Structures are given as C-alpha cells and as structure tokens.
Amino acid sequence: MITIPTGDLTGVLGDVIPFVFPDDDLPDLHCVRLEWDGTMLHALSTDRFRMAVSSWHPDDEPDADVQDDMFVRWGGADDPWTATLTLEDAKELVKVFKLPPKKQRVPLTLDFANEQVTVRRDRDTGYTAVRLDVPDQLAQFPDIRKLLADSDRLKPITGLMFNAKFLADFGKVRPRAPMQLSFTGSTAITHVGIGKRFLGAIMPLREGETS
Image (tube, rainbow, N blue to C red; front, side, top):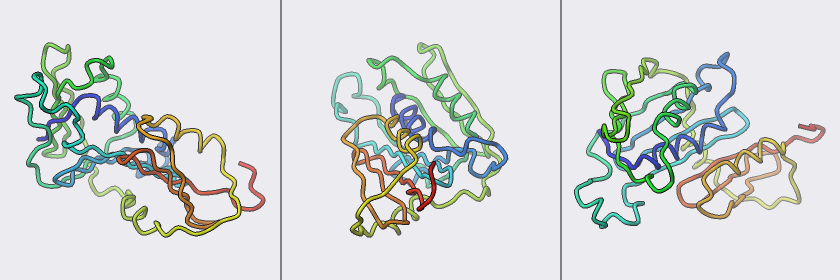
C-alpha cells in the first residue's frame, strides 16, 4: 500500500488519459497502466501515435513538514507492481476522488493485491473506498518508459509537421513548467517534456499526410 496526495493520483491519471487509444477494439491500449517501481508511481498510456508518462515521487511534496502533514508518510514500502485500468475505470477514479484546489493534499491510499486496485480516503471526504478488478495483467501493453529512454538521441531537423489536434492534447497536461520539444529525427518520435515528471512523445506526419 502506498499513500499519495489526492491531487497527485488524480493528476497523473488526468495527465495521460487524453493519450489512451479511444476505442475498445484494441483493449491492450484502451487503458491506463499504473506502475509502482518501489519508489515512484507512474501512469502511462499510448494511442500508437503518442505516448505519455506522468510520474509522482514522495519527495515532490514541497510542504512535507507543515503541521497537517506531520503524521503522513508519503509513498510506501510495496515491492514493484503494475496494474492495468480500463479507460472507463481511470476516468471514474478521477471523477470520484477529485477535490477542490485547496484540498489537493488530502492523503489517500492505493493498494494493489489479488488482481484488484483499491483506493481509499478518509470518511470525512465523503468517499471511503473504490475497488477495481484488474485481472488482465498479461495485456500486451508496450514498455513505454523503455521506448522513450531508447529514443532519446537528438538529431538536427529542418522542420516537422504534426497533427494539430494530437499536439494540442499535450496542453491538457498539468502546466507545471513550459513544454519542451526534443527532436530525434524527421521520421522518428518527438519527445514532449513538461516539467520533470511528465514525458510524452508524438509521431510527426509523414510527407503527403494531412492529418
């Protein structure tokens, strides 16, 4: 079990939801992958043309020593795990647990066990627990973090074209820093970084493509 501020869980999910494959005829991509690597929580998605990874680290909390947080230990001692949420379940978590801006740091717990994700928050918030079945842990979801790491060699280009709608979705990511584009070639993915905890990618249009 890990403990995370409500705003960070709904935040990482909300960051990657726009990049999920929209139709359920590709169930392996019509989903959000949650990965706890033992230290950080990552939310990941892809629609084949774009990839997105939004991450949270317990040390990201800027006010960890304030009075309200003195007895909250962010993070947890879980061994690494992965859980695949359907797009509908990911949206439901954001809808159910979303809080006003001034209450973003209300803690909740996230637990993955026995093919089930359980999210809990104190009763005084109005929601106690949501349990989601995630039995398909063998889904053919790509290793997005590895794909991004393996394609980080920058190359000079003279110009690229992008699907404007696909590129605009990166504007829905929490604006924690300016957007930075890093080019890896005229026909390879372009990296899209927003702050230190979001990294995405988008494929440029090929010559002759219009959208």
